[in-house]
Length: 510
Ligand code: MLC
Image (cartoon, rainbow, N blue to C red):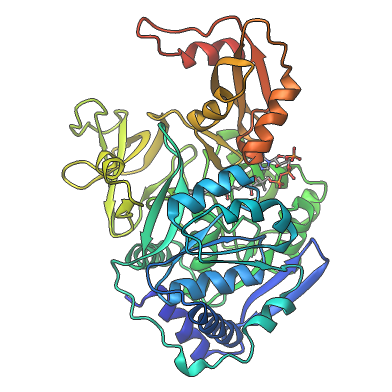
């Protein structure tokens, strides 16, 4: 097993002129190309810059940048010096950003110069922050000037223990605020090795990358996956269906990874009938359930049977339909090499038989060790014998295929992003005109689920739907904000006072 980052350097040594990343920046109608040799060199220079700031192993270094090359250089260099990369959604408004920086006790923060005015006051309040660097990401030149001419003699690759954390991804929970899932070098390498076998990654692959790079899907599975294989990446700063189909076809891409909302937009794209995708050897779907309809529509439109797989931030990928063999509609497939999966009774934890629904639990070198500074939440998340409780419900068929059957946790998935209702309810509770609220997900053709809030106003209050939506959007990233608000006099509650969300879903979502 060769460490993920060592693999990158090995490819740079063997094939320095090979294309690593071609970046198509739709925001500025520009393109830049980086070979493996150049990527390795700039990562080394970036490491020297990070060292000159005094960044040390174990430090949390937050990145809130648009999808751009400097993000990738920084992310790889941070991990390379043994520090912890903490990528953040550029859409987080100051309130959410402040929480992540403070909770992670970030020591360094690289942020987008374009929003400096908005976030500088937040940054000033974070005690742990030693330095905040505002980067101009409109073109790579500004970043290159920062790193060029560094003395590389001082730069050594840290010998990173497989047990050391190198990446932190925040995930929300059913109670309380988001928690940082720590991923180690060992986790990342194990996951990449198993996906390389399962999906047959090859050096001559060309991945078209349209996903955000602050989540496991776009960052670990897609970007790291391609770089680990020594493949090339065609990276788009933003997803656009027409352009995506055009690039997949004209650039003869071989691999594409996306979420169901993206696949649906491809099927509906005006140029869908004009493109030929028959040369693609792998098109995956994940981060949200792929409906049977969409599975079929994609097959009919493009003649390609989508490969659905299942993963989460804490585990990277755990189950996948096979590259060769049956890609079963409605099923997420078979456990990946080196990953153990079992289905247990959610009440007493005893294993259940085939075809019986229970909680999906997972064990393997891919599974994260802990939530950042949350020992109680970490121990709740694992069984005493070391299995991670995914919180998803599913069943195993007798031939080993797994099918997901819902969630034991109260979770909404919108366009591949997870939204935990308590986080949104907490924000609503702070509104002076709101007495009580409940947030639910309603089925939605485009997004999978749509966030909706049921609100009880304070007596005499006149707040409107638009005002509440606007209020939420100032405090929460766009995908978490409710799309619609329904006012009621009372929330349905059981004898214990717990809001009956199933009743609300039945009332409002049909
Ligand atoms: C964007 N919007 C969303 C949204 N994405 N609202 C709800 N849910 C979403 N997912 C908002 C925008 O802010 C905008 O609001 C409006 O919807 C329309 O924007 P758009 O231009 O149509 O959206 P777009 O930028 O095209 O984004 C759609 C998308 C994106 C599908 C490309 O959501 C996306 O990249 N999703 C992938 C998420 C992902 O990578 N998840 C991986 C998690 S890791 P307004 O009002 O401001 O205009 C994981 C593990 C695993 O889950 O197994 O993979």
